[in-house]
Every structure is written in structure tokens, then in C-alpha cells.
Image (cartoon, rainbow, N blue to C red; front, side, top):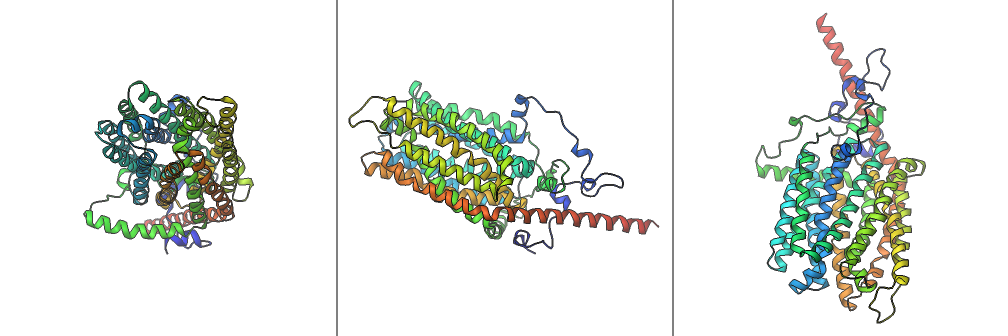
Amino acid sequence: MTDQDHVEADPPETAPSVGALGITPDIASPAPGEPAGESAAAQPTIKQPFFVRLFTEPMWVLGLVLLVDEIDKNIVRGMITPIKEEFGVGDFGISLMLSFALLLNGIITVPAGYLADRWNRTQAIGKTVVGWSAVTALGATSVNFPMLVGMRSALGFGQAITEPSAGSLLGDYYPPEERGKAFSIQQVMLLAGTGIGVALGGGLSKAFGWRWGLLVAALPGLLVALLVFKMREPRRGTADLMSAIGAGSVQHAEDHESQKLFDDGFGRFVKDMISGLRADMKTVMSIRTMRYALVGVAALLFTITAIAAWLPQYYERHLHFAEGGGEAAFGLLAVLGGVPGVLIGGKVADKYATRVVGGRLALPAVFIFIGTVCFTGSYLFRAPAGATELDWGVAGPAYVLQLLGLFVMTMAIPGLRAGLTDAIPAHLRGTGFGAFNLVSVVFGAAAAPLIVGAISSAYDENLRVAFLAVTPFSFVGAAILFRARKYLDEDMNKIMMAVLQAMNEERDRIQEKAAEQEKHSN
């Protein structure tokens, strides 16, 4: 029976064993007199202080990975003006630098997702963080613009590797009813990193030069890598089965349980990866929720990435913020609008998603639609022709609308991430997130800064025209995600059926083995 049958069949004929899913036999098969679903593993734990949890809890540590990655990626967006002046490039050249890193991300992310379903994910993330920190620092040595583009493009491998592994880890650390919160913490760090990176880039480049900014951005990653190396690898599917039987705790994998990727040589590894990736992608794409979500998210991220990449320049060029003020305004927007939006969105996803058909996707679709309307309205506030000074009568309402729009739009992120996790089997979540990243990056985010830069250049460096031109794609994305809500609950129920089937099969095997041993002893 293929992996696809686990998703499409009702009920599945076979499923992974309980041992493979990470639930110990005493939980799956309680002893006589022991209440079902209770075990020593489910004892309550003492809640640690926040400062301790920040550096030890998986959702926070993986969030810190996103934080430093986003700082590294976005710090250059706060340095656009001095980089343009030093190397003599325009909007189109800058858009190439921003797009190439995203394009490399999209190319690498699918094979990285396939490997995330097979390798030790915590070790892979930690080593990747060390690598991208080194590349960020090397960018400060660039002697010309092509060298800088090459260094910044190389950073695309970072999130391409860490994102599928982190998404897969969160799915195994936290059961479905806690995933909204887990993904909200992770995405809060992403937004904070975006804002901090842009603001830090603008401030450091103005005070010390853009090269120092790249050196500073490289340092925190080394500390975060140490935290990741201390994390223990969970067994795949353990959180799903905890939810299915209503008991248990996360079980950790032993070192020998991770596959040795190159035991049979590199050539054999590549051959197996190509054939395995083809099979895994076929199974993932057979999930209707995934197909709709990929198209919707690609359309959505096209608009969001296009606007986010150029918004600091929009503030300075069209609303007449001072140099460095646009980057600071963008950073404040991300922190004041995005952070609370994601946090509240996570709570809404966990509390209300089950009360709405396909709520994990339906609610995000509504949030995205409302947020896009707010952003579209903000572009209607224009400074008078020939104005060169900041006018808060124009900039104020525009900024408030964008603040509100970002707040509502980011409420969609945790539910959307949790919904995709719910719809993908545990042993394919790395591949699923890899496919998600590929489509959203290559067909959405990678092209967006380039297209906006080209449109802006064609209209005399007019970013307002470019923003209005790409905004309709966000409405299309929201509509497609709303359509996908019809299939989410059904796909999730099929996965739970497979998990319960695995538990029953493992219980039967344990009972048969015990009966056989008793027969031999007699």
C-alpha cells in the first residue's frame, strides 16, 4: 500500500506502527485496571519562567532561528540607499539582489524538505544557522555589486533548509490543538526579525556604513545555533497520536533512528533521493487541501513580498520620510502591527478554527481579504505634487491603515501554517513544507521584488503604481484559500484514522506476542 493510500483511503488498510510514531506501548495499550489514556508520561509539569522557556522550549528556539534568519536577510533592505550610491545601481539592480536569494531558496527547499523527513532535523538546522552566519559576514567584504549579489543570493539556502525541518519539528512537538500557538510564536519571530533587520540596517548603515551592519547581523546566529544543538529530536508522528488517544507525551528519537544518508555512496543517495522525492511529492500533491493552499499562498505572497521589499523606499520616496526614517517606520510597522497580529491569530486559530468548516483556512482567507483592503486604501493618500516635506496629514492616515492592514493580515499566518500541518501526514511534513516553500517562493515571492522594481522603473520610479498593479493577486489568493476550506477537515480526519489504525495494529501485535510468549513458557 502506498503513502497516498493513507491519505485517500477510508479507513486505511495499513499504517506506521505505534513504535514508529513515538508512543510507548503502555500508553497505547494500558495495563488491566489502568484508565485508558493515562500514564506516567502524561503527568503535569511545572511551568518554567519565560526567560528559561525562551531558550529551551522548541517553539521559542525555532522562533529564534527564524528571528536571526530574517535579520540576516532583511538587514540589506535597510541599506538600499547607501548600496545604490556606492555601486551605482538602480531599483532594478537592487530587485535582482533581493530576488536571487529567494529564487535559490525555492530551488533548494524541496530536496531539503525530502531530507527533513529522513535526517536529524535539529542537527541540520543548527549547522545551517552557523553556515548562513558565516555567509552574512563575508558579504561585508564585497568589492563590487555582483560579488554582493552572489553573497546575498547564497543566503537563500538558509531558510530553504531550516523551514521544512522546523515545520516538521513543530508538528511532532505539539498536537493539533496547540499548533496555532506554536506557529504563532515562530511567525512572530519572523515578523520581528523582518522589522529589526530593516531598522537595524538603516541605523547601522547611516552611523557606521552598511558593511558593519552585515558583520553585526552575523553574530547572533552563532548563539542561536548552540540552543538548537541542545534540542532533542522527537519521534515522527508522536504528537498526532497523542491527540488521537488523548494522552501521552512527546517521545524522543534515539541517534540511531536517523537515516545515514551516504552509507551507500553519494551517487546512490542522489538516485534514491530523486525517486523518493518524486513519490513523496505525488502523495503530497494528492491532498486536495495542499493543492488549493499552494496556489492561494503563491498569489498571496507575491503581493506581500512585493510590498514588503519596497515599503521603506515608498515611505521615503512618496511620503517624504527622512533618510533612514522609512526603514524605522517599516520596522515599527512590523513590530506594532505584525507581532500582535500573529499572537492573536494563533489564539483565534486554536479557539475558533474548529467551530468553522475548514476554519484553519477559512479564517485566514477572511483576514487576508480585510488586510489587503486596508493596504489598498492607504495608497490613496498622496502628497501634493512637488511636495518634499513629510506631511502627517497624508502620511498619518496612510500609515494607520497599513498598521491595521498588517495586523489583520498577519492574524492569518498561524492558522494557515497549522492547517497545512494538520493536513499532511507526519512522515511527509518536511516534503510538504518544501513544496509549500517552492511554490510560494518561485511563483510568488522571488518574482515579486523584481516585477515591482521593473514597474517602478517604467513609471519613473513610482512605487505607488507598482503596488497597485500587484495588489489584485492578494485578493485572488484569499479567494482560493477560502475555497480550500471545504477539504481541510476531511483530509485531517483521514490522517487521524491512519494514526488510530496504527495504534490498534500495534496493540494487536503486542497482545499476539504476549500470547505467543505465554504459550512457549507453558
